[in-house]
Length: 411
Ligand code: CTP
Image (cartoon, rainbow, N blue to C red; front, side, top):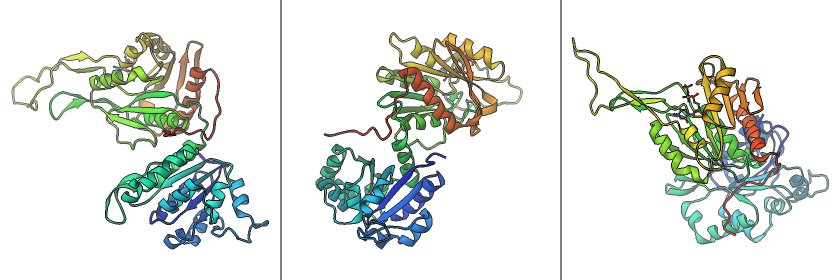
């Protein structure tokens, strides 16, 4: 469970987006967190404390004079138990209060009295978000080491369209996991390729493979949660982009090569998870190849695609390179041979047909010290283990810096 043993204080302020906090509470409790809900009076106009109590399994606090707390100091008692405070939704008014240090209700008072990280998830009308006062307040919060997530763009409850929608519960959930996760790759710039490439033959046909991209996306999520600045170059993948990761979609191996080479100069760690097509049609037909009775089959000639991983590893000052090997047999021999051939310090081998499209994976690590098998695990747990393994090799130690979440600072 991603949040087992974690105590979260979830604060709700007045916004129609309060309904999303109900789903967020479910996600957090299902992940093993204890969720203590605190609401402002305004939030209680949008969703009832009864709903939030039922979903969190704990009484909801609104008043700073709530006598249910033994010493009648809920602003201290509640904030001291928390590993993090999350205000979702955070209204423009509440953000302004935090920026100036005002504390005239329980939630604003306990936010100021906290001794744990504070994560703000704004929700408001697009004009309110763009208003220079709000923007000034957001800059101030970030300068005060408060993490402020950018809102979503899209249609708003008021009927207008723009920036200001509260992030979806799944995105907030991922941001909370990232917040509490040890920052072993803090500030490292990481480039990951994922998924299958597609090599066209004609306008309707092409060659691809069975890679789903799940392992590469799981690694991108885990690397971002570990504090990395992750860019993902994805082939044919029908998966949502992990929170905090930037993404570029390509189709062919040559396009993937071009994108990687355009980005690689700034990269600290390159992880090649993509199942790159080894060959492409020598000539892509402009029109659909037709079958005709009695005619010979159309001739297909192939040329080799560039080897992206080997090309990056051969750069004069390469980033730390990690390869994946999808083998169909004799993994222990083929894995180490491939690591040497590509000249990479770490290669992660698996048996492709056993893992393509599945949620679990069983891999063997190949490095200069030998091979290390890892037990079968779901791809997200495995990705965290692999990120730890990579961090150890890159940094030579295990930095532990929970709570230090990367955010652009205007201070
Ligand atoms: N790779 C790459 N560019 C290619 C082919 C592979 O970057 N043109 C990378 C993959 O992303 C992976 C590693 O090289 O990290 C090994 O890929 P794999 O398909 O297992 O091996 P190949 O090099 O294609 O060799 P073979 O198909 O002969 O096993």
